Length: 306
Length: 321
Image (cartoon, rainbow over the protein chains, first blue to last red):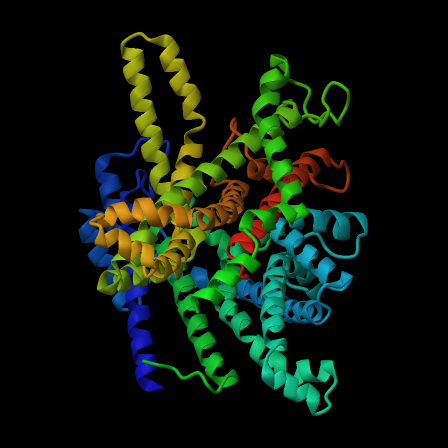
């Protein structure tokens, strides 16, 4: 177990390091700096401004200054929002995105597993067909289409739920549904295919032979094995939900981390940009690690190899 | 064993036959062909004055404007179809770029094998663990200004030589520079799945006797790849091309919706939806700005997904999801 974690931690650090390097260099070689305005600014003033953030000198000098700051766990200061540290900005905005992502994650995994199992057990009936058509439909409708429609129907027309904002439970329902919808479909399709394979296996025949009903056999034995491919998908899913929330945040007017990212690119706010990228990568690495550990817990045959 | 294999190949119908029996996939294919033709031809036939901006903004659907007009008084039908051109075009060309990169990468990785294969596949895994959409955004921001400056350089060069027509054409093209940037950036990011699938197939194919025979007859590695492996890969490449197109279209409209992609005067489904989503309000609903792009885009993505799933069932039955 321990060598596995050490090796994993090592390769994760390398991945994150590469991503930070590429992001920083790309952001700095891009034309246009963080302090460019329409006003004419004298070279001296511009130099002083850049120097204050260690953004003067060659790109490699800037890069090493940034990396050494990162090594000391200092994410730097925003160049756009004065007197804001990147860590403070993230701390303020991340919780909203986390709650939204977590809600969507729970909805997507529970509804997906349930619908997928149902479709597999009722294979080739109208339940199966309509569930799979619905899945393809919801994969084909991106959140920036479903979002405005959900608002138009449930908020404006029926008036059941608020249009936007964040804080109360009723404000969370529509964004979470909108974010989860395509992933319910992905999970349901995965679950259906994997359960169909498992239903043919010997141990399920044994379970039926000893007198379990089909539902009992599936619930007690088959789901545990069939869910493994779904769990592999949950790692990337978690990361998708966090990045995908950008659209939902903008449609439902939620102040979250997704908008920080978009704005930091437009403002050339290089430290905020890199900070957000680091957060996403660290989360992704953690989720994937979690997935591998879950695997061994669910299927005792799988061992973690270093 | 060889007999069993031969029997299996007889029992399993040819992929094209499977596809022909899949009615949903055929309808989807027909829809896409018709849509592409309409998107190419109809904007050319529309009267010129419909295409220009006018003072008649937000006219509801009527006889003069079948789908109404937008904020600038432009006809929505024209905007929608030119948006379809851009979205489908970006999807197709972006997917083709990713196809070329992914196929070459996967073929080399699978055929050469050994340590090089290990390094190449590890690289793909690393790239796959990078949040893709974030990377596209950074790439677009980085490329956009370069391309704009580059096109501007050409325009100034044309002006300096007093080629007014050429200068005007170039400045018209500049409005579409973002399209070029999007195509390249998306193509550069979307090839990872293709590379993995192709490599997996090459690993199987390269052990086949006809490859050994070809090598024994002195065919070069490149010749084997081109003459023997590529034809055998063609259906699987076609399948994943069809599945990559909707992914690229989705990414494009995602970015355009956030205002990072296609900008006015050019239009794409994403940028039209952005405009449509901004005007929904309880007092005066301008539903036509939202409903028509949403319908057309969802129908196209659904058709592409149906076709892609159909192709995958036909040519890659084992892969599932």
